[in-house]
Image 1: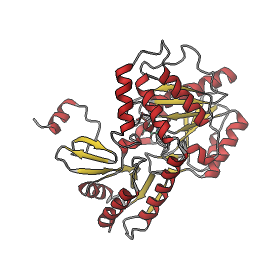
Image 2 (image 1 turned 180 degrees about the vertical axis):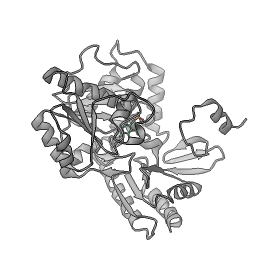
Image 3 (image 1 turned 120 degrees about the horizontal axis):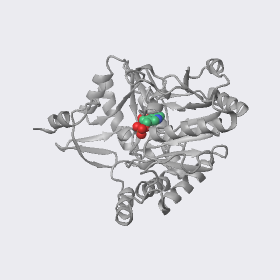
Image 4 (image 1 turned 90 degrees about the vertical axis):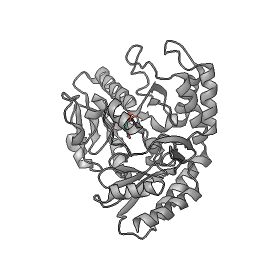
Length: 390
Ligand code: PLP
């Protein structure tokens, strides 16, 4: 039996996989079992921010694995505490809770918002506004928070207490802002639904409303965080101070980790016993996150991501092709809008020619390359894209 047959026999069929089996990775390049090479513009959906098998990550894993991988949260470990310190200092937040994934971080963030409000205002102030077309995860609460109808089937009952606001429509937000609202929860660039950056003015107005009404500003940086947009956090580019921020994906560069950052208002909401996670904060994932932060959180590295992102967007825009309707994004989070009916063919053709890309929304080809992508590799992608799009 070949691997494709075995996969369909032994795995729940929740993913539409491309028919390729990867065996090795090096930098931005992946190699399949037939030794065909691909330039990876997906980073495992925004995870491999330092590419594949980055020497510093490999070294950290092997050192930490040989020392200590897991002891539970009954005890202290240095990598966990160092990682919390680095995240707090970099974000100017106050403290951290470690989880294992984006959904788990968001789930914890929802719990903090509700407890904060419960303690100050009683139990009826518990609604969280999220945005239409958002994506926040696959657990019951994060699915309920996700503003897309297609995720709201089968799994009844969903978690109550969410309402959905049109992106960039402050009037719609004000209409839905009743006395029961305790938090406003959003991605600053909606990733899964099509690489849609929110308007700066909208975000600033939401921040003002949150501050005036003591509503928590909750930012999902699972996809946009850890340098993806050219700053360590996307919220820096919107000049806002969130109350809560969630992280995952790039923070572990390939190893599962999630985190919730809380500001002064929220830092003491969770008390002993209120929340927990067996694997959360384990020394292996935190040691890796420390290495990731040491590399990514450097002004030169982040500036380079910003400049490469601008160059990449300019180069795609300069391809003269009727297939490309729009190019948008920030840093190395890029969306290329194409004809909805041709997208799948374009993605497959790029793959045939050795370029791996993602889809998003209904008509977007999404690029989330490793942040270490070189200018030469961007030029190589552009020359292949020219052939495919023209
Ligand atoms: N939030 C955002 C913005 C995401 O893009 C994702 C995943 O794509 C999630 C949350 C869920 O993260 P995870 O798959 O790690 O649970």
